[in-house]
Length: 83
Image (cartoon, rainbow, N blue to C red; front, side, top):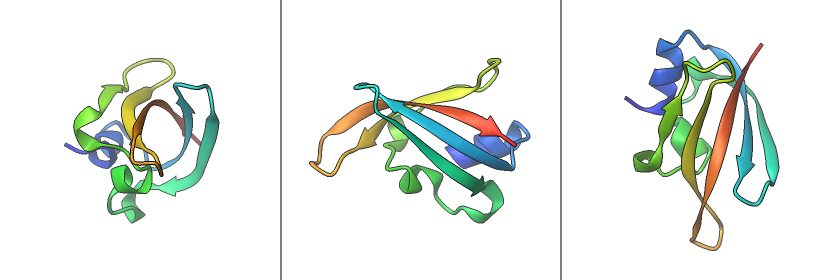
């Protein structure tokens, strides 16, 4: 099950994702309607095999490797913000 399907199965529909990388750089991807997104991993530049989910937490999040422009990857933590 991919990230989008996991989030939908947890009851999420309209979300923001707050990403923090291993260097503490922060970015918010706002206004994501999950039913309209085809490939959330691709949109966020995530390596699908690296995803680890912590969606049952008070502050749900996932951890994954994010592809960088240089070709390398950084670990990111993505907090799910529902509104």
